[in-house]
Image 1 (tube, one colour):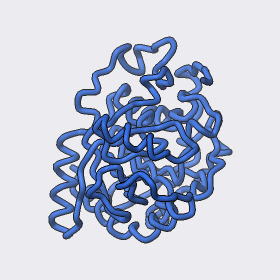
Image 2 (spheres, helix red, strand yellow):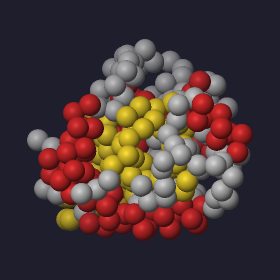
Image 3 (spheres, helix red, strand yellow):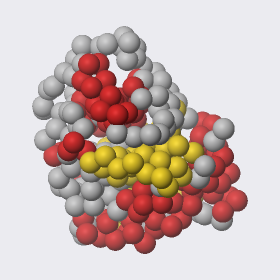
Image 4 (spheres, helix red, strand yellow):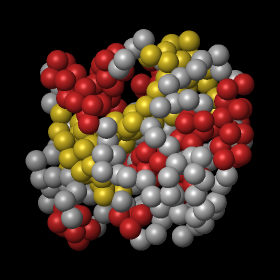
Length: 279
């Protein structure tokens, strides 16, 4: 486990750099997972800031995560989108992985939409489905790798934040309404995070299904914990990139990216509808 305890000054240093390189003042953040970068290309009047130029920002080493902030207008709202993300398995600490969320919060972002590509553990799920995340299982955090581990700064959030409604019920209802109006089939379920980077074994799949998971991935949960610690409202969406119905399907990262590419239109339509419906 990699321990690193960051301070508010480090978050604010990143936020100040971002603020100096954009004309926009976003209130909504987007985290775009594997294969979902195309949505960032639709952001108008965009300021693009590569991760590697921002003080303290972790830099993605994974194909499909191009590593830039795209700040501008989407569906009539000012947004800050992460085109790609970093992962715990890349060797970063949990606090470094979630630094971008802290920087967003320091800039005034109060609503976060997180997306990911995930394996479908629920036997009814198929590749290309979109799942509304209604709750999460923090399996990695249960073993100690929690982004809130270490000294707590009360100015950032409480020592023991409540995670009862990690995914905001009103945002979930808005997503359901948009899905109905747009004719987008919307699955719902529990997302579980494993550390990765190896994909799940058949025994892993059987175990996490018994735990109550519907989809499995290698991200999202730390970002949501930090967002909720900072008082942000969160909406989570998983693109089901492959089915683990039997626990014996072979999986490759290239297949995950291709599934994302194929299903991006309906996920993008859903996100843009949610943005348009936000007050």
